Length: 123
Image: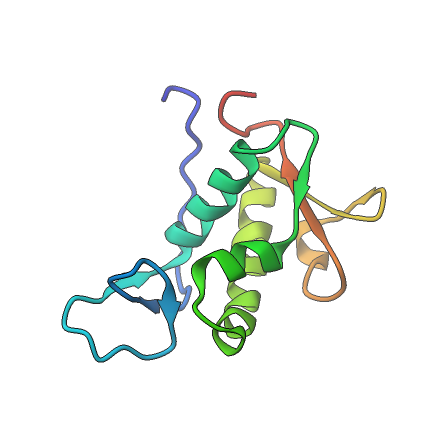
């Protein structure tokens, strides 16, 4: 993994990760672990790596893949966007809106898509 790009995500919220491997806002299970920004980043990277190099994903696809229900995935969306912005700042992904590439600072609102960037592993 010589082309791996490590990105640190300080000050990001953690979400409870249930034993079934999906995020929940609360968990009564003593076996729960935590989903943090690295888990979100891993999901983004995994989803992009499974698609063609020119394909894109929607941030809500990432949130839905990690969450059990609509309330939870919607609550996760700001964190998914923040992680996407951080990955974009490091050139790992590109954030687009229509045919335009967005500055990572400008992705807080509106429909966006995530694509592989110049520093995406294996590119």
